[in-house]
Amino acid sequence: MSSALTDLCRYPIVQAPMAGGASSPQLVAAVCEAGGLGFLAAGYKTADGMYEEIKQLRGLTGRPFGVNLFMPQPSHVDPAAVDVYRHQLAGEADWYDTPLGEPDNCADDGYEAKLAILIDDPVPVVSFTFGCPTRPVLDAFAKAGTLTVVTVTTPEEAQAAQWAGADAVCVQGIEAGGHQGTHRDDPKNDGSGIGLLSLVAQVRETVPLPIVAAGGLMRGAQIAAVLALGADAAQLGTAFLVCPESGANVLHKQAMTNPLFVRTELTRAFSGRPARGLVNRFMREHGPYAPAAYPQVHHITSGLRKAAAKAGDAQGMALWAGQGHRMAREMPAGQLVEVLAAETDAARAALDLRGAGGAV
Image 1 (cartoon, rainbow, N blue to C red):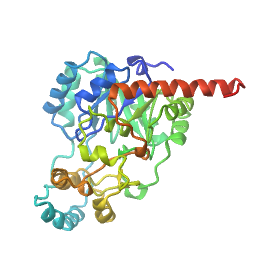
Image 2: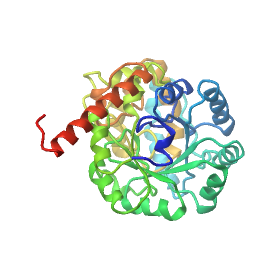
Image 3: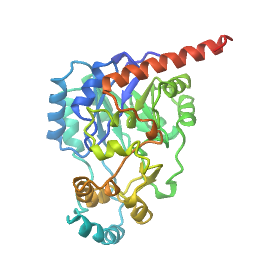
Image 4: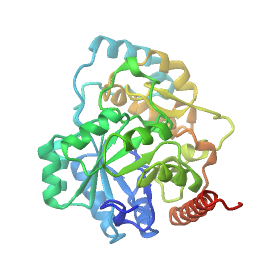
């Protein structure tokens, strides 16, 4: 399938933007050079920090790439619930000998400043998570020659992205690692997300926009499956997290296939928003009590997570991972792109052969 988005890369393979350091310029460049579409993650960075990474990436590759932004979050947070949770984490602060962060940090992640930079000095693609930009914002990017992608988790969110003027949607299934990109954070909906295969089919019948499918994808056969359902490309995060070019902590990388971590769950324990990670001590002890308070909880636990990593304690870290984490393969990112592309081609050829009535 061809679209303005997939025309930017040789293969229908997108490296997910992983906020927190994993999506290093080196990883993005390696993916782009190999024929995929790599994404920098601007989330949790300052506008200047984002721009410095863009400049560094441009020095590593001349291929098209993307930048992901977090949408500003509404301030419907119960301060009392945040205070209670902060009190519950006092023991963690003592254990790791580090102070808890302050919850009253800015909730817009420097959104306006980042928009100004990206419109003034355009990049090929900008994607958005945790909501949908206004039409004037998307129109401004279109005028600048930048393609826009909105992360969606329901057909209704996909419609909202279409109406606002997005060029494509990233359809995120419940299997995805890291934060769920829901446009509204409603605790009543925790755990009720839609699986990727069903969601892609529903969105394909709802909007005519190009679809990037994301959620638990680790092999080329899975990429072929979402392409067969109508997706234009597949986005993988956990698969690239263990690559040597990834900026993820070595403990995080090792945990992907460590038999101590056998499953993933959605939790609010680390950030106050539902995110899928490997079940560890911190998640088990604090997940049931974490309030719906993003990014306040993120700021409170940030120092704890860094201290746990410094102490070599994976049980206190946010080990974001998709449901396919045990299938992670440690290899250079460029090689992984080539392997995934070959697997995809083989799987699609097998599907074509079956469709033609041939034996496999």
